[in-house]
Length: 209
Image (cartoon, rainbow, N blue to C red; front, side):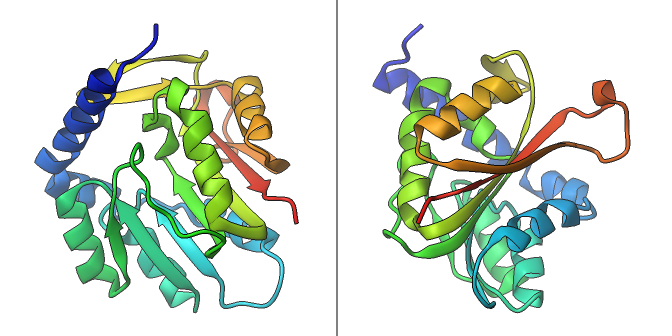
């Protein structure tokens, strides 16, 4: 089924409204989540000497922005939820842009890395090729994109008030390759559990150059 512009606007508006309505609880509930494995996966593949310019795509309340800044890097946040933008600025002291994922306005060749942790699954599948090309373009040649998404059987739809698309490895690999990325690694999370207890697919990709 093809989503028309009205459908896409509704998906964005309702998903962001759900996050806005639950912003305080979301911040409290995710504050202690350990994503150090994911941050390390991004940083170890970036070439050159730090500090690095990192875009935290879908930065939420700013937990990971604080971590990147504490590690000495130069992170910029981006989120579409107004409360998250305010929280992230206050928590991290970093620059945070308010943009939604379907209407990105990103500077070309600006970042060494893009950290897309638990965010790109909110992009409807038909729009993903365009969004991934926009992320490719905001990376410097040789730059790195990290992404982690809840995995599934390449289905999409509404889940507890938010829109999500749930890809398997082959489906995600195809999308990323078509967008011009080279695969560096992938793994499943949480670490150390049987595969059926690992709902998250993490992967790392490079813009050639």
